[in-house]
Image (cartoon, rainbow, N blue to C red; front, side):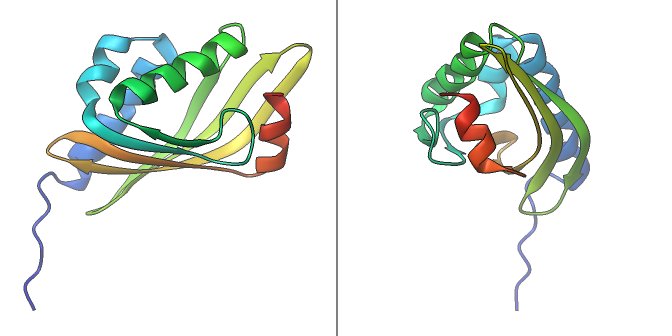
Length: 137
């Protein structure tokens, strides 16, 4: 059985995702544009107004912008850990945002798939998806 050799190692993938988190929290669109593949896909958890599949880097960055706009710039993804593997790199974070007198403080995991040194897929998971959906209404 032939073993697939990863294009980038777990360490490089972990560093790339950490760099992405720093760029996200700083609102650094230039770095985010470099990190995401043009044809990347993002799966936003839940059934809320911001949930669903975002196809393409531009749609993903627009979604990130919407998180910032709807939270009056308070949305932050506080990294707790990044775990790299051959096929997936996992970001474990505490998500915090405020919106119209409401506060979102939720444990979140994002499973990233990387190819050629870029994020090609992100899937987010909240510890309480219904609460996250309600926050954005």
